[in-house]
Image 1 (tube, rainbow over the protein chains, first blue to last red):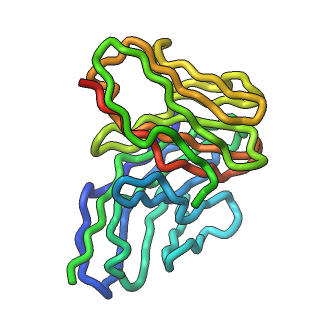
Image 2 (cartoon, one colour):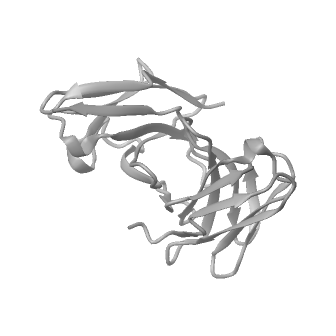
Amino acid sequence: AQSVTQLGSHVSVSEGALVLLRCNYSSSVPPYLFWYVQYPNQGLQLLLKYTSAATLVKGINGFEAEFKKSETSFHLTKPSAHMSDAAEYFCAVSGRSSASKIIFGSGTRLSIRP
Amino acid sequence: ETGVTQSPTHLIKTRGQQVTLRCSSQSGHNTVSWYQQALGQGPQFIFQYYREEENGRGNFPPRFSGLQFPNSSSELNVNALELDDSALYLCASSFWGDTEAFFGQGTRLTVV
């Protein structure tokens, strides 16, 4: 069975500050890991994905995440927050079969203070 | 823009009614998945279709059913609507074997 746990349902940072959104996963098989962003009243947009190549994954909009097998973590970071980063962020895991479903965490709402 | 379009964008139905949601996949994709996202929660997998056949299902009752057409467009049907079915329904298309799924904007269903 696979699952993800996002630590913190709401994170608030100042504009220009470091963004750190935490995600831990559980998987009995080597997983694929994803971070998605959802803006209000919109669908999901893929920020980045880990598929067993480099453990440090760079995504869009300056975000990156590091896969740490020993810690079963896949935390999302961005060095300097921008007001436009305010959104809901979802960590997700899937197996490596083409038929694998994507399992999402409960989400972390990121707020940016001016 | 992901190339995945869903219709309608919003829908209000009465408890007990039936509803059909539609999804047009991104060009070239042959796999469609549907997710239910209740307010304040992450999306939950409903089912996946590949080559017009159901190819995996989440923990949803049989009154949730689907279809995939030869052009890879898809429908989600929900019978005997319940208040708890109120949610954002997301469609995701992909190419079989790819790691990335592209999501549509979703259909917001409200059951009253």
